[in-house]
Image (cartoon, rainbow, N blue to C red; front, top):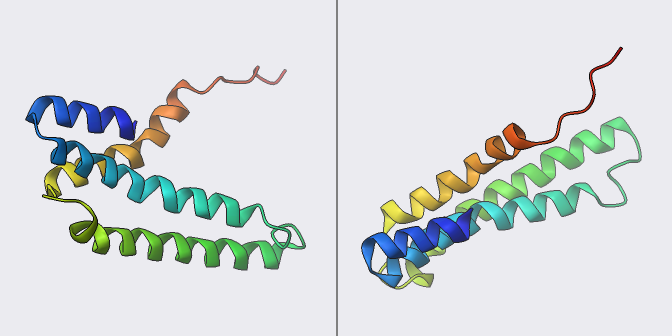
Length: 111
């Protein structure tokens, strides 16, 4: 979704910097989510319920901190940053989960 958003933004605006901004916005969602998912699958996540809960909170804080750090670094990393395009990429990448849930295969109903 992030790549599609970046390509559409680039095509509409005619500026590569707008496409890169949208792509970076999507990456500011995808990279922290991947770190979060990897952290939750670690060896300590399944020891007991308490450890799992603490691990979840810890990795959620890491995810939020990484997202904030990426947003703060955006002006230095993306040349001619377009904040509206970055925010569109960010929002669409966050909302793609709902799209995935809408099109997910459903199991058979219980009898």
